[in-house]
Image (tube, rainbow, N blue to C red; front, side, top):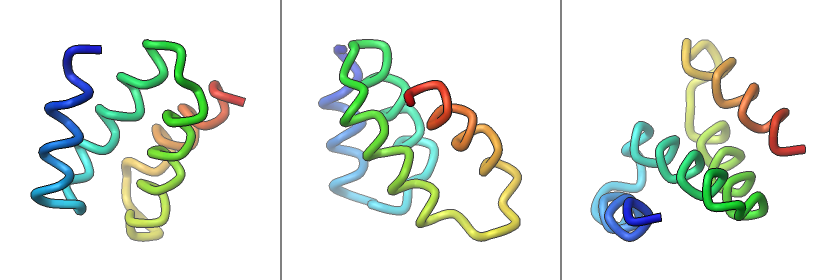
Length: 66
């Protein structure tokens, strides 16, 4: 939970900082905020290129949140 404001701040400075967005999704999931976690993971998927090697991990997170 302590990481959430820091990650949000990082994303306010650079919205394309994908690692921070994934970390934020994980942080939200760990605090039980599944809606926010899903929102951030979905947002990340829209920002990642189609062939990005990170996509399966983000999709796995989304699947776990459903």
